[in-house]
Image (cartoon, rainbow, N blue to C red; front, side):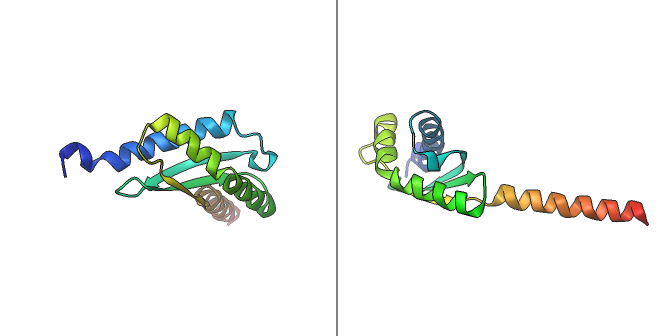
Length: 121
């Protein structure tokens, strides 16, 4: 593999993330896809598949509806990627709900509670 080919999936992942973020913010009209953020993208070595991590605000039900809306828009989003990336084959998109922000908030709450308990003692 050529030196430039070694980093191709990373470059494509960055372009996929930027493109999807822009399209989701400006072109998707589905109300289910309200407050979603693309938190990361991993592309397969052959650039035919993209795992797209999504963070969504709201209740569990709202998050589920957001994921359903994204899956419904998958074909449109892939078409937008094909135009933007100019690849022979646009990667197939797989959405994954990213719960990292939720976990970080929960850890913050626990640490705050521990700090408060120490102050009381």
